[in-house]
Amino acid sequence: MKNKFIKYAKEITIFLVVMIIFANILSFYRSGAVSKEPLDLNRVTLLGDIPYELPKNEPILLHFWATWCPTCKAEAQNIQTISQNYNVLTIALKSGSDEEIRDYLKSRNLDFNVVNDTTGQITQKYSVSVFPTTIIYDRNKNEFFSDVGYTSTFGLWLRMWWVSL
Figure 1 (cartoon, rainbow, N blue to C red):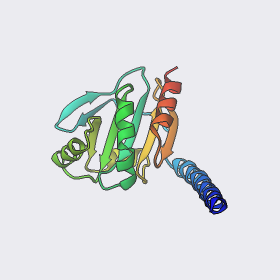
Figure 2 (figure 1 turned 45 degrees about the vertical axis):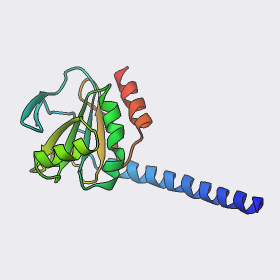
Figure 3 (figure 1 turned 90 degrees about the vertical axis):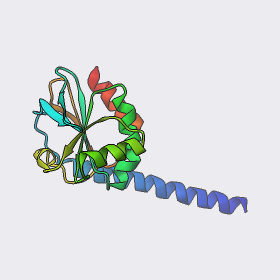
Figure 4 (figure 1 turned 30 degrees about the vertical axis):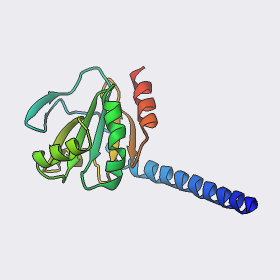
């Protein structure tokens, strides 16, 4: 019995390691399609018609997501945690009205900055086609890191810490 358990544990571990490697390779491949141009957003309008000026000379995390995206739902708390200590601007695409997005955020105890990209203009500008996509810009608004797919809180925190040095 013990030998079977060890055998299955090894097989499950190998499977998980292979899947993690595959997911990271896929994420790296997909992030190559994201725009590498410097961030050129200065002012945006958040939910509720609230004007927001992006911080100058500070790194910022730009996160593209959608309410219908299961991976985005799993990653939302990670973005929330990072937004408590770093500049975060999220862009919601094809996620309904401002009110629907606010209800979605409220139901999950999220309060990060959100732009409702109803036309897809911002999303298209940064060549985002897969959700979630995260782009981190340094204090000069140059791309420091981009990732497509789920990213852990620790991974996001480590990258934001690094770019803030």
